[in-house]
Length: 112
Length: 115
Image 1 (cartoon, rainbow over the protein chains, first blue to last red):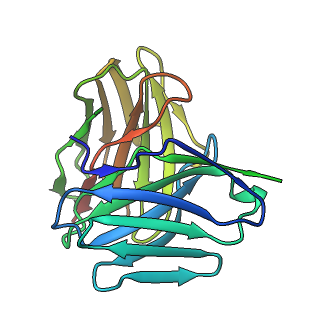
Image 2 (spheres, chains in turn green, yellow; image 1 turned 90 degrees about the vertical axis):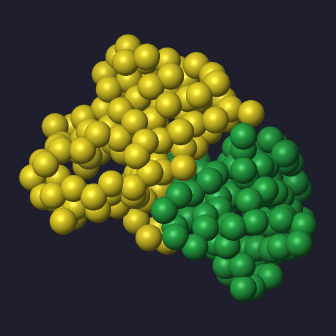
């Protein structure tokens, strides 16, 4: 069963607006979370991460929020740009880092 | 949901030996499987793409003779690291799709340590 879920397979946003990508997980032992961005025919590119001791991590236009009680994390992109159009994967691991569990991805389209 | 497993999850081998990593789609037929390599806190590097019954397509810079990929069935792909060296130590992840442009379902990864 999927331990990391991205329930929205696709999302469209106007350029300049905020994009919010969501991710849910089921395993309470997960304590490290990552977001990857993937363009067609390329491998996923690491974007931003957050450990469970934080509830927010910011890097430029990208902010990841973690709600441990809800087992939910989200990636905010502000402002969205056409170049952000890609598939976004969230992933989680426990403290060992020996296994990573990926969501199935959300395809973001930013409309100029 | 679609589940992809990898075996083993963690393997330690001696320099010069070969190690095989399996990637299985448990409840669906995967026409295409991908093999990635990840370094700590870095992007996943696509190593190769394999379609069932045909030779794998390797990315530039990936040694075909060192990283042998076999996609013998619609539910199994294997990656064999031959004559392993300590620099091959890494995290290897596979993913599978049911059809072209379908969602990718990722395996949990295999941590390889070469001593």
